[in-house]
Image (tube, rainbow, N blue to C red; front, side, top):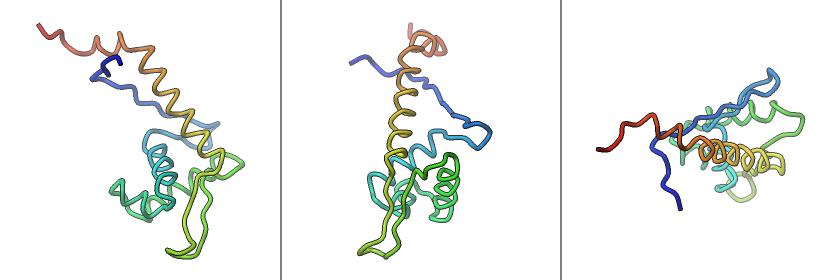
Length: 116
């Protein structure tokens, strides 16, 4: 496996003037998918529950179909999950970021001085 560059590309997607999706929102989506809960995802990112809810609300209004689906009911039945579109967007964003880093590896490493 090739060594990862010490410089990475940071990508933010702007969606038709509706808003933006960058690495922070993608991480939140991914963590919601992993934990099945907005509060657990927020805790794992050291983010307030209120801020996580604001971001989820923002994400859900970027496109016509919500990216996160929530269920009220507390610890026994409540929770959140990524919709099919939410999972698709996280996967595609990560693929774009990885392909961009791979394609630009030589240019990225040129930011660093040679280790002579």
